[in-house]
Picture 1 (cartoon, each protein chain N blue to C red):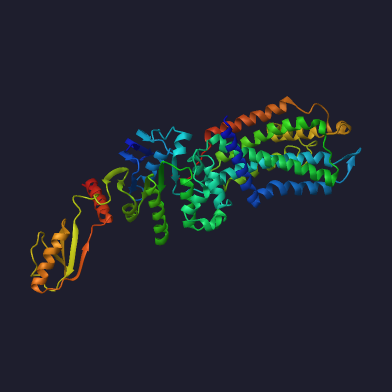
Picture 2 (picture 1 turned 30 degrees about the horizontal axis):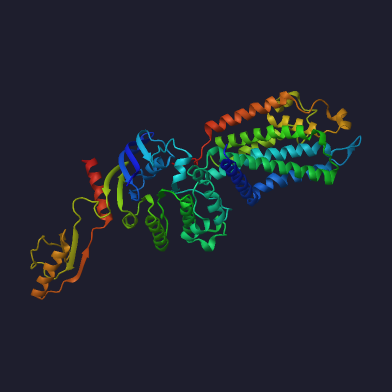
Length: 262
Length: 302
């Protein structure tokens, strides 16, 4: 990769960021929604177990949800709308290579996901006594990297399969919201029927949430929050399988021109 | 002068419909060529194959020495495309758009100069969504030129414009011509082709039915009509052409209007006749164009 290409990737990250923050609706759903969940959970589940605040459970879970929204949902909807508007077609007529344009979009979404997690942690810490387990931050970053790659690829896969930007929100939210309920994000699934647990295990979000949550489990809570290693290879394997599926669908079905056009 | 576009035996089908049915032509450097034709004639399909958006079914295309269908970055670095319908990020400001879309070109024109060229100085800090249709089209033009292209594609540059906006756009395109750029434009406005292009290619049903300078296209030499009113159609001079009379109007068809007028006015002064409402009508491109299309239709029906 040449220096000029790297500069062009940065230009596209900055460009996509700028457009994202100027579009109030997308920024609202990505940032304000999880903040709302966090505050509601904090107010409802106000308390602690053996010196560990409840916030220690739900803050990483909501951060995971925010990161999935920032990548999966935003890329699916944002890219489809950009395609509808003919912007992708314009880009294809310029010397910008497709991989640079896509890198710009994906890395901008990843940056938004990172900011969302930092915001959730900061609010959890300020409002509800959430503490960062610094020792596990490198492991958490590794989990984050694989997860955002997976959810970005799946977001672009959804964009590749939907016809227009009008159907994209319904499809993307229709996937991510039920997935969040199956993945221990909004409610613990300890008492759920076992088939529901199996269904959850098939999808990547549960494994992202499980490893990320485990990374922020303080040692004194290990007894009741579950111990074991932070990084679980079987969980990575499920995410990697979805990552490959997302890349494959995108490579085969992605179109730069508006659908229904000539 | 070198050849910029070379097309041979080009075919493109969409299912049952043949959009481009065997097209051959070449464009040399510095030419301003208008592709003229009604909707559905295959103009956009043809141009989009030249731009690299579409693959031909058969035939050969060479643009600036590249095969557009497989060419990449270097090719797109040297062309400028102004599509008929393509969006710009609504929340971007005009200056930001020009700077952003310029970033990928190896050779780019300064944003401020370009904004001045298309007359958007006043709107440089306005968001795209606040621009009028005509202003947005001018920004499109600026984005097509930002990479200082050798070859510019303009797909229906003034469709939907009011007359004054069209004039302004024409002036801009004329500015490009004087910079020596090669331009391929599509239009279904005949006066636009006549005004801007030094060569017109008429497409009908995916085939080229006429190709020449705006003055030369048509069937045979262009004949001019000299017309006036008369009260007495019985006493008319026989000049080099036979007069025809219709609803009290006399008209002569000629390829030498100056000589005919000289004879006609000489006769009128001699006879003391006033040539009421005399007019000289040059054949418009529209007449030529319609007659070409009619002839095509006749050939098919027959």
